[in-house]
Image (cartoon, rainbow, N blue to C red; front, side, top):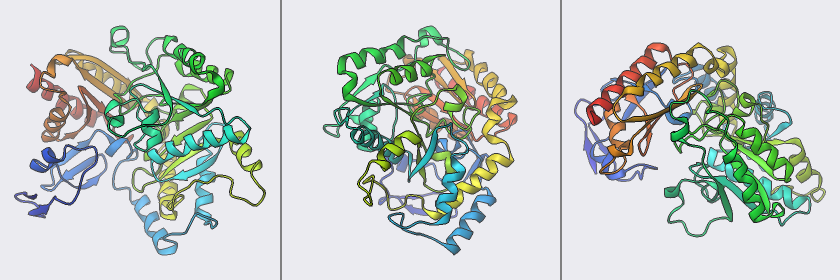
Amino acid sequence: MTTKIKGCRMTAINMDAFWMPFTANKDFKQQPRLLDRAEGNYYFNEQQQPILDATAGLWCVNAGHGRHQIADAVNRQLRSLDYASPFNFGHSIGFEFANRLVQYTPDPLNKVFFTNSGSEAVESALKIALQYQQSRGKSGKFKLIGREMAYHGVNFGGISVGGLTPNRTGFGPLLETDHLPHTLDIEKNAFSRGLPAEDLSKADALEALINFHNADTIAAVIIEPISGAGGVIMPPEGYLQRIRDICTKHDILLIFDEVITGWGRLGSPFAATEFGVTPDMITSAKGITNGVMPLGAVFVSDHIHDQIVDNATPGGIEFYHGYTYSAHPVACAAGLATLDIYDEEQLLTRARGAIGDYFADALHSLKDAPKVIDIRNYGLVGAVQFDASVAANGPIGLDFQKNCFKRGVMVRTMGNIVAFSPPLTIEPEQIDQLVKVLRETAEEMFA
């Protein structure tokens, strides 16, 4: 398929070869939404019209686009050491980046295993959990527990513990897992600001699962502190601590998937810090390099690392796992420059301050917009959910996204939920623009 776009730099683009991920390919290629460049909190299409980035790219461009400091660091690294094998060789910038990263993680998460993405970080964390149990003579602990409506990437481990049905359907037998109930309860908690009121019943469901499977068969529980792709679902107050307590009681590892919630999204470096709950591992990606270069990481507690490394055969490989691009020197350079920006501009705590309050007030002003049944937010992440009655011909997400894009705003949609995770650099007037477009789009489509 060749698409011609009048008035563009490229008047003809052959779109046949690129099979786009998580995209309605036929629909997109009939009416493409092409981006030409990005700067600050905006994309620009090929007509150079600004498009407000209300999703930080894909939950990842936390410091905004076009940061010269990162580009310069990448350029310097490319000219110095463009690639080095991470298998039995090393480079100083990989160790420097790891040492820098663990300054932001809660103790005792002081070890870093590098990957290329959030999906790979989850896969690695699950394998570390299984290796840990085997290393201490508990190989019978091999089952994994995830949660409904959770997204943990697209590798086989991730879709096994994940709770989004379309991501699991059609891929045959998966790992042996079970799933906690999700925590979305619109009937009780609609239009909550921040965390909903305390309700530990969904956390106590973990006890029932453990009793059913037997704790001696369960290696780890993995959850997103706040679900992202499932629809920006908040945990009730006390929920995460209760999950932590149950895992500790039954000798089960707890993994927080913080690919989205990490790096300032909630007003702290990590949700673990924000909510005062320390898991055994944290998975990270996206904002770790401001989305500029692919890189992910698993932050691992000292006792897990030491159990695996100290009890392996002397002189042998302790963990048969890794990636060609683990700790890629250019990605590490991008990550170090990103951390510098976060520190210099105090971005990791900005969502906790006035801009977070402004974002919350603006979003909740949409409570009277047509067909809105829930608004939820924390820090600089939020969602608006529309009544199912608007979806007579299927979920409204793609059409809503298209209509917002026409009005100059990029949003993320899933079903009848519209999600927002703007760059941490967003300003009040840009939040006003976002809310204005959301209201206009809802009125056009549903009034």
